[in-house]
Length: 101
Image (cartoon, rainbow, N blue to C red; front, side):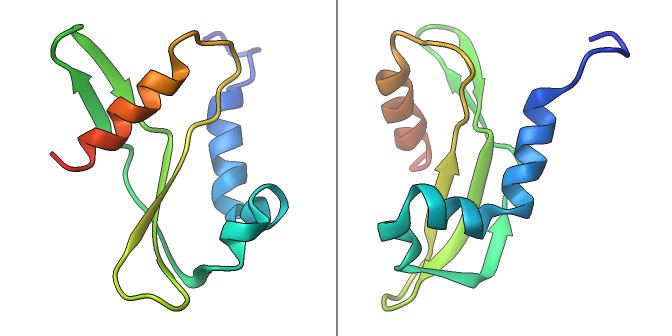
């Protein structure tokens, strides 16, 4: 990336981390009402390797938090995408399954 280019990905991630609560309220109001926002923990970027395809993938934003009326932790994963990806749904299933490894 040359110095005159804007790193949109990094800026968007910073924006989401700064305004995560507001983002959830605006785009996912039903989930917003159930999430406890006082103990948000932004996890380091997770790396997933698809052994069969030999591809390496990174999850953009993963937030660890709790629900208001339930025990245990939940993970909220945000994957902004600036382009069309034919197999995006499949990628989400793969990423989700990697949390259990």
